[in-house]
Amino acid sequence: MKLLRNFSNLLRVKDWSKNILIFLPLIFSGNLNNQFFYFDLFSIFILFCLSSSFIYIINDLIDIKEDKKHPIKILKKPLASGHVSLITSYFTLLVLFIFILILILNYQSIFLHITIYIFLNFIYSIIFKKIPILDVLLISFGYIIRLDSGSEIILVDTSIFLASSIYFLACFIIFIKRYTEYKNNHNIRSSLVFYSEIKFKFLISISSILFFLTLCLFIYFKNIELIIITPFLIYVLIRYYKSSIKYLLGEFPFDLIIKDRYLLLYCLLIVSYILYIYY
Image (cartoon, rainbow, N blue to C red; front, side, top):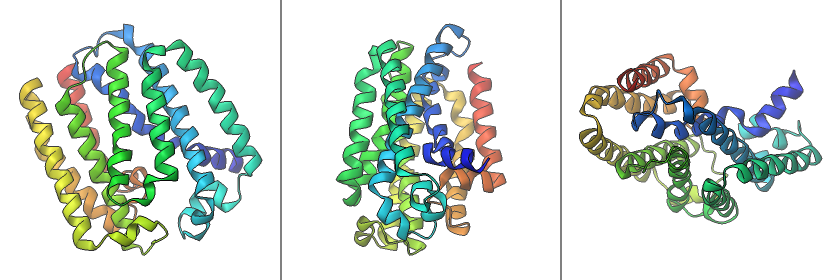
């Protein structure tokens, strides 16, 4: 059981939830009842899960020395803690690469998406993660790639307003992640030297404002019925920000949402309403 848990942490299985973005074009294009797309979208979901795990392991290998100095990451990351050996991690990378290659050959239409996704994350790990602000802007672009991959598979155009709102929401969450590291005095990340509490609050505020502006434009042009979810989203963003400070879990968004039951409940209500509207 312990071995399975360590391997799950190595692959960062909990973070696979980010790849659910692939299904958004299916919902917002009105194709939720079109079961013809389900298998292909699920396959692409698996492809991105494998690709993200591939990147996570590479990132952990690069950061292993820094993670060993981090009071939380040394407990959560199996490579830093020594619960998973380097040989096992390299073998896992090889297996992941083989399965990624097989899936890409079956879905060549998103070959460019996967290539760009892996490349961006790779250069982020070795170069851009040390550059403040730019690191967040670059890594947030990965969420747009996921979204557009879903659109490509079901042959629809990605809404520029939906893509923008997803991008700025990602910036909001990642800036909070950096802010929590800063508040926790986990100054292992070199880019944190640039920041101050005022700068973080400004960047978080700007990201949230841009998220709501682009989301409102998407709702106005696509489906005005979605306007009902906006006050709930405001509550979710405010509570997410406050809970990240309260529980000191901004570095681990999935754990934060699970820990805060009200935050989880409101997220589920928003998702349920969207599915109701489009189903």
